[in-house]
Image 1 (cartoon, rainbow, N blue to C red):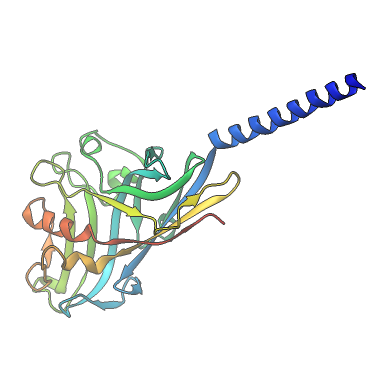
Image 2 (image 1 turned 90 degrees about the horizontal axis):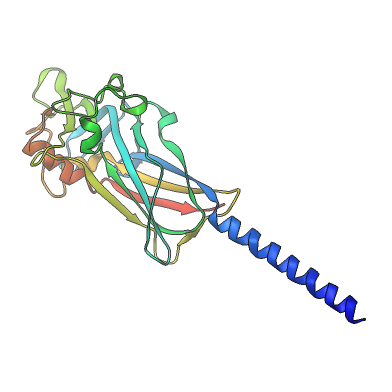
Length: 254
């Protein structure tokens, strides 16, 4: 009788140990996060070729809208610890729906926010010829002296005074006094800390409103500034405005 109880106790301990080991393994494993960007013009989903109006009532038809997302990290809940995602330099291109979203792998945990760099950091700007989304053939690169175009708008407006009523905003610059990269932090709404789960993909949707480029920190009317294609004060003013471009759409683990 005693032997039977002893064996039962041993089996119970082994089962409990196996369960704890599994839980610990799950906690230390990785799970997937899909980050999706939804490009907007005001409250409308952007469509290239359609006409929209900025804060000043100026019309604008977008022909190109591109920007770099890099240095992605997450805020862990409740510790507040920063979790760095694998190195990613991702070009979002409105003309190519396949670029709107990308998949990341990080350790399983609970999250309360996402932070990333809009643009390409200075190290990569001076690192020589690169591949993937940083390939110069992506039409987002000037020279090794001026570096990458961090964000780009091309289009047309009846308020533009240049040939073909063109609007050409190529925002770049990474050196001191000309840096247009901007850190974007989006905390998740209070009470919506998201728990990642093994075998499931956490979804994060981020809205990007291109019309924020023209107002906010600075009033930048198309009539006055239809073109910006070099680093400098005007470019940093646009960067100050597009810091407000992003808002959190939704976040959840299905």
